[in-house]
Image (cartoon, rainbow, N blue to C red; front, side):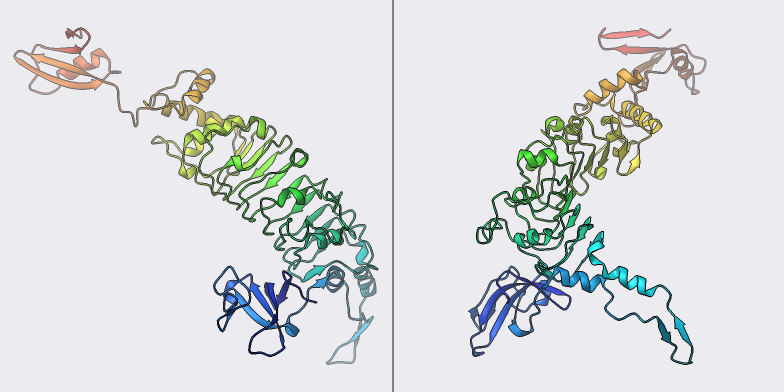
Length: 470
């Protein structure tokens, strides 16, 4: 029996049931209103001949189909048997079509028998099938199953997930990606006829939980994770989350968190403290600044951080990453950072974050680090505006000593030299590093000074006068 909210698959297309009932002008026939995941598959937004039967998010995301041709979802046992059991009887011999010879199939009986022992499966992969219901009550338990992959199926109720997991008591990895789940607040917080307590455990063995593209909202994530008390690794990208807020109990056990493709806008949207988190991925989350971020208390054990796909253009944000004292591996779009001429942003990031051993999946060797730090010193120690870099300059001078200031952009430090020859006086700008003898030699270059008594002098503003360089 179909119901509102149910997910269905028609050929290769998936949709959600939004309406069940009669359609004006078609008698007593029952129709099903569908909202397609792929809006291009539909024809309207739920309005037919001027009457609205349901509402879709996209103007062409809806269709009306006769109820009798809408295929129902299947239970998980049916899909396991369909995927893993050899249905046809295995013959020990087969006869060639163009001759009378027979070929004996050695070992095929054992292969078929092995495939039929579904309760002994360790990894069960049912991607892009039509699982929408738990198995029948008489179904065997899958005690050896450690991985259950339900990617792209037709689940939408959390209580169905709970009912399925009763038959997988030792599963360690559960993949629910691309099952569009109801909000936890809908359907009685996952309860059905009082059968479930508020903190009922779904699985106490699951360590890795994949919830990507499940239509989770901000208020559902904590309620879901509390049902998996052993889960330390969570993958939840592509859920349109604007905030990640979980209880201290949940936060304290998480070690790996993948929240890519959620519009957080800021690291502050990851609420609370995560004392044991070592890996965090926030790629493509709309983050534009890290100014003010302090990771020392929020992520005290973080070793890996992915910020790819976020346009973070300022060095103050890079400086904020110094608060992650244990950070070793970083993914960061350096192309948005401006640098002095002759040095790459990649080198500056290495120089600033002394604990990094891997930047954008390239190893940072001791030789490369030393080179980056010295080049950074030489490029930035002499620039005028260096407030974003002064702390790093001071630290690196203590390690490598005073820099050889790079003058590529700043320009040479020069002084004015007056060259007097009789009544003729010329002024030239010469590098301060040039020796006095070199200046004297240059004063005789050029035929108009050769053989004359020329005296080069340096103009000194502080003395309001001049003195000979002899």
